[in-house]
Length: 91
Length: 388
Image (tube, rainbow over all chains, first blue to last red; front, side):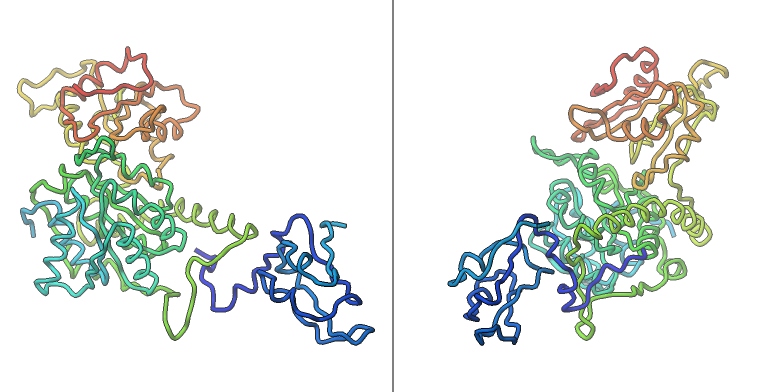
C-alpha cells in the first residue's frame, strides 16, 4: 500500500470539482455588475465573491471561481441586472 | 495443549489469545456461540477487550471499522443475512485499507429461510476486497485466524475466515488453541502509520474524483494479488512457531489421478474418506486391488481470495476429469468455484463439471461423492445438482 488514503482537515478544497461542469459556465460583465451580492447568496457552491475592485461606474463587482463552479446557472437567473451570462463550454 | 472444545469456543479462545482490542457483533445462527463465548471471556475477566453490543450487523461492522481506524486490533463475526447486511461496510473497510479480521460461519441465504450450512453467503461478497480463507477443521480455522491478523496488518487488507456453520461451529473436537506466548512471537504489536487521533485529525475514506479513483482500486487489486506470496511466507513462519501446516491449497490422494475433485471447507473430510475407499487404501478391509481404474485425487482450496491460479493449474494439468463441488451457486450459471477453476485452467482441454451439493444444510454423503466420481465420464450436463 503506497497511496495515502487519508485526508487532513480542510483539504477538500484541494479537489477542484469544476471539471464536473459539462454544459455552461458563467461570465460576469463587470461593467453591468452593481455589486448587490445576490449571486454570492444563491450560489450553492459558494464560489461567487466580491473582488474588492471597482468598475468604471464605481461599483464593487463580483467574480466566480470556475475551479468549483458546476454551471447550475442560478447566479445568472437571479442577477437583477442580467450581468451574468451562461456561455457554452469550449466557446 | 489439546483440548476438546466446541468449534465456536475454540475460535473465541483463539481470538482471546491473539489479543484483540475491540469486539463488536450481533448474534445470528450459527455464529452466535462464537460471540457469546467472547462475551463470557470478557465478563469473566479473562480478557481486556472492549465488547460493543450492536443493534445490527451493519452497526457491528461499522463499529469495528471505526475502531480499526483508531489503530487498534478488531474482530467481528457473522453469518448469512448478517453478512449481507454488512456488505456496504465490508467494501468500505477494504477500501479504507483497515486490517479487520472477521469470521463468517457459512450459512444459506433466504428465501426460503434456512439456518443451515452452505457457502452462498460469502460468495455474495467475494469481490469486496477481502482476503477469503476457508478452513476444513476447527484446528485449521483457529490457525487461520492467527495467520489472518498477521497478513491483514502487514498488507493493510481485511481478512475473512470462513467455516461451515454448524458442521464446524457446533462440532466438538480436539483442538490445539494457538498459545498466547507463541502468538506474541508470531504476531507483532499492531502499529499503523495513520490512525484517527483527536490531536492529529484525519479523514478516512474521503472523497476521490475520477482522476484518482482507478489508481486506488488498482492498488487494492495489486495488493490482494501480492498477498498470495505474503501468505505463503507467513504460513511457513507459522509452521516454525506452531508446528502445524497451513497451505493455500492442498492435494490429497493419487498423484497421477484421472479424476480430481475440487472443494472447499468441511466437506473435504467426507470427500477424502470416499476417495480413500475408491483408491483402495491398505487399511481398508478388504484392501482394494492395485491398478484398478479408480484413480482419484482431491484438491482442497483454502484461499479463495486471492485464488492461487498457477498453483492450482500446476496440480490439475494431469487430470482428465475435474469435478468441482460447490455449496453455492451463481443462479442461472453454475457453481462459483467451478467458474474459478475453469478460468484458472483456460486453454486446457479438460472435462470440468460443476456439481452443486449440500445447499441449505443437505447432508453430503460418501455415496454422493462416489456417484460424482463414477458419473463424471459420462456426464453431459454442465451443472449437476446432487441431492441424493
